[in-house]
Amino acid sequence: MTTLKIDGRSLTLDDVHAVARTPGAHVECTAEAAEAMRASRELKTRLIATGAPIYGVTTGFGDSANRQISADKAAALQRNMILYHLNGTGPLAPDEVVRATLLIRANCLARGNSGVRPAVAAHLLDLLRHDVLPAVPERGSVGASGDLIPLCYVAAALIGEGEVRQRGVLRPTGDVLSALGLTALDLEAKDGLALINGTSFSAAYAVLAAHDAHRLAALADICTALASEALLGNRGHYAAFIHDQRPHPGQRTSARRIHDLLEGSDLSRPHDQIVDAAGSLDGQGYAVLRRSIQDRYSLRCAPHVNGVLRDTLSWVAEWLTTEVNASTDNPLFDAANSSVHSGGNFYAGHVAQAMDALKVAVANVADLLDRQLELLVDEKLNNGLTPNLIPRFAEDSWEAGLHHGFKGMQIAASALTAEALSGSSPASLHSRSTEAHNQDKVSLAPIAAREARSVVALAEEVAAIHLLAACQALDLRGPDGMSPRTRAVHRVVRAAVPFTDRDRRLDDAIRKVLGLFRADTLTRAADQAAATD
Image 1: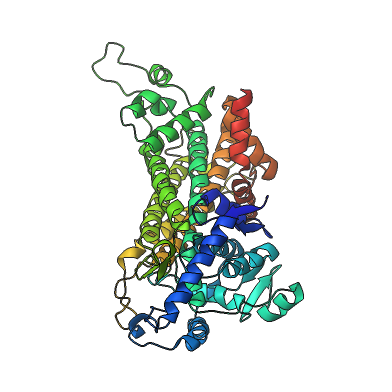
Image 2: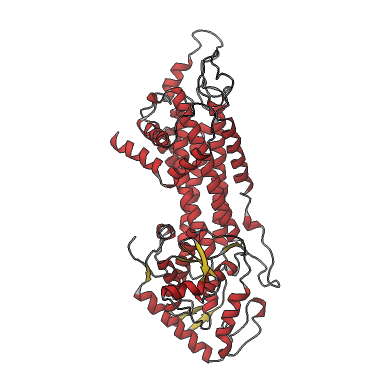
């Protein structure tokens, strides 16, 4: 990617995602941002010289705000604050999360309200440029006075403490900085607080979770289209007229997408053809139709379920865009009016609420796909497909009775769905009082955001199993009747994973399909088929 310029106001979620997935990204602050930071720092220096107490600069932190120190102790206070918060636990945050955290934190400082000089943001961006990633434990933040503990591991790396990952290897920070010709940051008053008192770690998880959930929404429509074909479904359920009468944007988008994916299919047919094939009374008072003229809810209502995810993502994107372009530390310096303000912008309530809502919407999509999968494998419900999608064997074949096909896959998908559902209870409702009742109401945004990302990953695994089953069903049904778009998806899957012609291990197949998901290969194949159709 080309050099990204940040100013604290115009960072996009796509920018965050691109930097997160790009080792060695080049990011710089604009000249205007550098000037704003200098003005903010000069104001801080003038206010310190007055001798007036400034929270976290010449006072202690939290409930220790009533204890003032002299200005000559201010830098040492910042260092101590970083060190005493280095008590995180759990696995280390993934590389892409750490990159996103570095970028978002630098952008927060670039807004020019934090009282720090441009060098502080530049040190964060140096780590990005060299892909030197602080080793940040995932757990320990309540998301109230910012993501104090995880962000302290970032601040520690800037001052040469702790460990960093470089090309996947953990090494002492000081050794890595020295080898690269980089110097540790020499802390001034407020620098440590500006680095750790904010929502950047929570926001990093949230941005990446939202990005992956966007991809999942597209995949859920593809999965539904393939399931509709495999089950000889009614594509009239996705007619624009129906969804225009309940015009939620996400629902309409999902219905249109599924309808377009099925255009030209001889397997999933329009409503009038379904009615014709069902039969009629023929003058009788009662008759059992040859087939139902409506599909089960997991097919018929798929746009209504996936539409909720799409619409949730629309406002989540607005909130997160605001969050990554905000001053989220405390206190904030107003250079234009020569004043300092103490507040609570570090409280990550918007991130927590967004992620709690997102994970519920995503888990519902996982449940939808799991229900469709049950229809595919159940011989009582799959309209003539084999039980558990086993290959067709002659009754006198030695192989008859030996195979169970996708029985284990359906069990796995149900387990994954149950885990996604169980991880979707709102984290934000479990506020704890911490830090001697100073932080007596906390957001728990980092927990909500981590859970949201985990739920998205689980839902992707359900979708991978679903797609493998749908392709298996369509091979049994006969793929020649598929639409051009779904056939393109089927070809891509089959290029990576063969038809399951006998019982075999399928964990590697799931991994391969997940790779197709994450490279956007399937959505591109469907879109390209639409362009040439």
